[in-house]
Image (cartoon, rainbow, N blue to C red; front, side, top):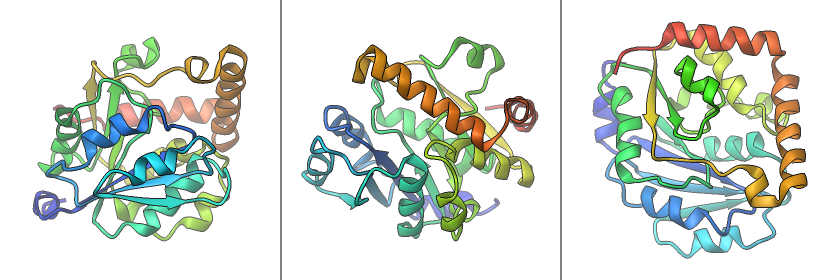
Length: 236
C-alpha cells in the first residue's frame, strides 16, 4: 500500500455507480462525481431500468454508461463495472444519495490515498442507529477498494444473490486482514425504499435485500463480520 497515493494522484480511481430506476436521483450524485480531481472515470451501470436512468446519465459529459439487458441485481451490475475499469482503485457509490458533496468523496478517498487504510467505507447520517453505536455500517454501498480485491471474479459475483455484494466483499476484506477506515458522512442520506417505491413495495424490497444478504452469509456470520471489521478499523 506504500504506493497508493502515487496511484491515486495519477488518476488511479474509477467511480462505479450501479443504478436501477434512479432517473429522479442519479443526476445529483453524478454532478458530484464527474470532474472530481481524484477520479479518472465515472461509470454508471444501468441495471435494466425502465424510467430513463441510462438516458439521464448519458446526457452528462464524462459519464460512461453500461447497460444490462435486464434487471440482474446490484451484484451483477457491479461485476460489469469492475471488469470495465482499468484503474488500481475503485470508488463504489449508490445512485440515490442525497446531501453528497465533493468533500465527502475526498474524505472517503483520503485514508486509502495516505496509506493509513487499504479500504474505506462510509457511515451515512441516516444509517440505522445500531450502526452508529457500533461505528460501522457493514452493508454500506460507498467504499474505496483496491480493484485487485474484485477483478477477475465475475463468475463468483454472478453466483451471488442480487444484494450479496457488500457482505461478500466483507469476507475478502477479512481474509486479507485489510486495514479499514470508517468515514462519517453525517450530511449524506440514502432514501428509504418506502419513500421511493411506496410503503408496501418498499417493505418488500427491504425484505428481499435482507433475504439476499442472509443467503450470502448467515445472521451469525454477519455478526462475526461486524466484529471482525471493527477490529480492522484504523483511526482517522
